[in-house]
Length: 169
Length: 246
Image (cartoon, rainbow over all chains, first blue to last red; front, side):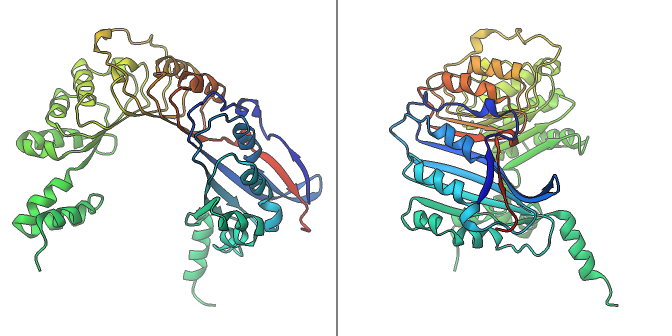
């Protein structure tokens, strides 16, 4: 289970804006980065997921428009290690979709992989598919997920290329 | 089987980002040559930082072959020298749909280019105007643009441009506005200028956008805005800490 969730990493007050004044709002797009990192802090190693969902939740909770069509989330994931279990990592997104006033949520996921090479390109699609709760919304047509092509950290690619071109010992 | 000219033309349109293939088509057959030529000049980028002679060569080429100017649908201008010759080819591009202009200080650009640039933004065919890195631009001269992108604007030591006659201001038609990396002072000017009743789409991106100005910006177009697109910066992220044993 998550051990703690603080509201903001930086001076997040600026982001707590309201959408109530947009009387004719039909759709809104949020673009943001997700960072999933394995960090050691005070001798304790933790997975840390930096994500914007509470800020988005705050914004859409203020919506007053009656003409809503869809919410678009354009997320770019940065991953340096295997992901925590799907049930945990996608939990904030599940809550956002469940409580969203929009009839449809479109999620586009791009991802960059760095660090350990045992991370496979299927890491995000597999994790999404493992979330039974997210798939429930997909099957109901409430959530539409599209995936970008994974981007591999250039240094890793160069390293892999070097290994593959090195003469056999 | 023979394909109609329209179909061949459509196929060639997919090669607009492939100048080598278009050049090969241009040399291959008289009919293909004519069709390929149109697509070779659909998108023009004049960048004298990468090739100092390019704008001068292009303007000479256009004056030698004026019909080419009517093939240009989008032009990106990123130059340090604004020659009268460069200004003279803009009015020849009568079917321009998109113009992208990157520079530094509007008041340091010669008047002949001011007029040529503003005239081309007012063409009936114009759909999309993008202006980047430009300080003290007279925003009211863009009132009749439907789709506008303003990027990396900043104020500097120069006072706001007041030399232009306000009578060039047109009725607002702005429907879509994209803003990238603004300094607060410049953003205040944009907020004061943004029309309260026509703007449907607002796109905010970049990492320097001063988000505390988002509220007044939204307030200003609250009656018309239907489609905002917002970049959330790192500072708005929350942290979920998870035990590695999960």
